Amino acid sequence: MQKKAISQKPFLAVAAILPMTQVLGPGNRAVVWLQGCLQNCPHCIAPEWRELDSRRAHEISPIELAHRLLANRSVDGLTISGGEPMLQAEALYLFIRQAKRINPEINVICYSGYSFEYLCQFPPSSGVSRLMTELDVLIDGPYIHTLDNGVGLRGSSNQRVIHLTNRLLHANLEDAPRQVEFVIQDGAVLMAGIPPRDVLEVFAGIESEVVYERA
Ligand code: SF4
Image (cartoon, rainbow, N blue to C red; front, side, top):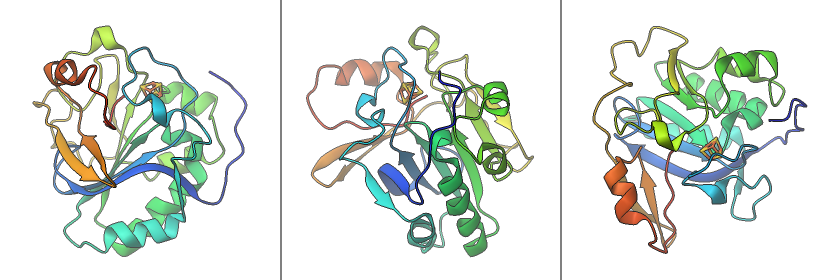
């Protein structure tokens, strides 16, 4: 892992968006997967989202994205994943702040391949500590395939569900049965959710644009 903060841009580099799902946290959630990750977890299922400057990424204003997703009043929460969300902390902070201006009740779950302690000590981009004040739950740590126990919103059991507020304490995020959802988007199949291991096995080797929430 590098210890120098990367420079950030005024927009979010987004790999994919799902305006509404129920498979990545409690209630109706909008999901944003951010482009770019500096880690290299074996069996990462979204390697195409690791590239920092992928031409596949969409550059979106955080304010505009918040208005787009929160226009749907049925959205209860946001789930942020990637890629590595903590590489875009400043723009992500602006996005969440704007989302909460539109709907103050919104809750936020965010994944990171870094541990909470590492983020506090060696933030990989500026604004990480400010961003963390806006999160209700951080699911931290790299994906370790051999520790994938097939349950919960964690990709593997080394990852921790860290409640930074008490808003989602009622939700069983650690060991609830996993669900996935397939959506056809822009001519590709988007897979949302943390897949049970048998689902991964079925899809191994299939050549399609399978995109999914991971670590
Ligand atoms: S699993 Fe997540 S943290 Fe690990 S390389 Fe893939 S995107 Fe990065």
